[in-house]
Image (spheres, rainbow, N blue to C red):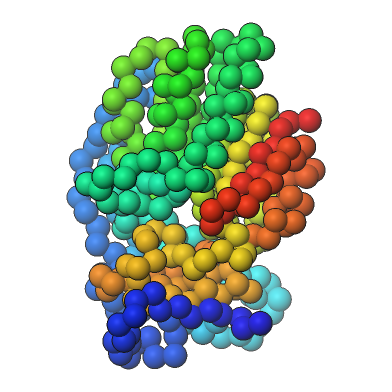
Length: 347
């Protein structure tokens, strides 16, 4: 099996690569469009404590120096040195690639304001019906909330780890109130600051005083550490959030997701045998891409000239079950659309 998969989505011939990309389908340090910061003013945000305050302006996507990745992920210091140096190199690679992943989502955050099955769609399009995956996610979420309400619960707390523009939490909050929950608390975090700007703006559409929303910028690798045990009745981790966690950090993230969940955890990930994806846009908007499964990395040349690199770990079903079998009881795993879906419940 080849180590890397090269995919060219468009039938038209791929134009010659810039000289900085010869032999490497990776971000070019000199690429002028790698980072295009946009000025943003602060926006008001409804927080979980019920107070309204000003949310900080979104951080501009960092223009991370990607040259260290041009030779199989090694830093510019070369491959020699002590074991400690090698470990430091590996840690720097993981951290910087995570930053580049956040920058990629920042650059295309606008595309996630209207989604079906985790893929952005044209907001002016006529087809706004949920796709297979969205419908299956919602059926399970609604079932869990109905069961909790039938058991006499009148208060619910929900966490969305990797909330994007907050669309799922807003929909869940409204549905919980329809079911008769007297108090609904929702918390979402995302690695991309621009996503949180969109989420806080959407939260202004909620005028119900019984709903409290809190959106913050945070990396799932660290954002769960300080949350209390069993703090959330339902925890979500949808679409590709876990695909962007480095392999060596997955067990710790899974343990924390299980620890903070009181009732049910629902997650979806891109599958190992999935069709090619570039995550941040429909695949037709890429000139070329290369998925390196052993390296858990994807490199993309976008049609608009941007050069992106993201953490990209694709899951087998057995691997997903093994990760969460200890902290939670697995109720269901199922291949759906281009994803694997898993529902787990607290023991």
